[in-house]
Length: 377
Image (tube, rainbow, N blue to C red):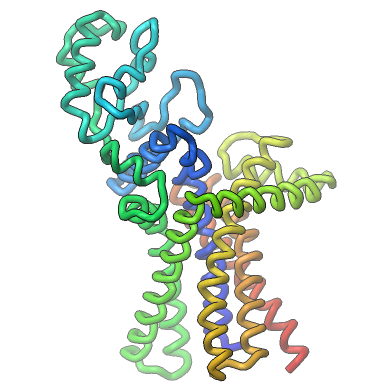
């Protein structure tokens, strides 16, 4: 196998792992199928909009703490409520004792904001917001979400422009890193092979665009699929398989220690036993689904080349095996890299560490495949 093919397999493996991490980190897709799934989708969409605006975002709502914040943005706690009408959105933040989220901002659909402020003003007049007597403060409590109620409902479902746009934003970091890395590798290889800098630049630009486009298609395709019944079935099967693997690993003391240490580093807090296995299971199941789509994107074009006589059976087998190995070992490397990156700098460190670790794992896997196939040449 040519060096460029091996390197591309490694890059593909790293991209798949990074894409899966982005899906797990920025998308609460298992909850989108629920009756209130659009509320979870709204949380994800608004959090992503804040991230893209350069704000520090921590989505803490997943722990389901009673009357806790859904996310913290630049130190400000926010509770998101997306209901059918402005009155329902605001009223969902109240119980028999008044406003349930004292000290937090209440985020409502963008199109409901003006009316929601008026509803909150009346709540203040009625004495339902502890410590607040001036209705004008309603504008400080209620904040405008980045998406509308209808957009949130669409984001929770597959096959529409709003959900595809959200998925593209979620996968933008992975796509950008894939493009940059592919460009660098292709340019260096071009120059080393005797191309002029101009020719190497053209080749690198073409290969990076193809690699980035493929990463985007795989990432968006995975997230769209996970919103469907078929995708949920695949995720369920992948979850079962992942649990079996982790249960086997944890049968030894050393394996259990590795699982718990890795999960703790990824979570930024001490995790043990089932909690640690649950965290890694989520990552493994998404990586399996993402990897399956990535394999299809790679194998189908190669199969067409094989049928047209433009690729030999041996080349097809080597390419397919190399990509599979790159994805598998890439995930292992990405998980370790993300854990280390999280320990150093949560957020960007997680992303960069995961991609670098995935690349290292992918290179190792592809090299192993090359060594294996060399025995039959």
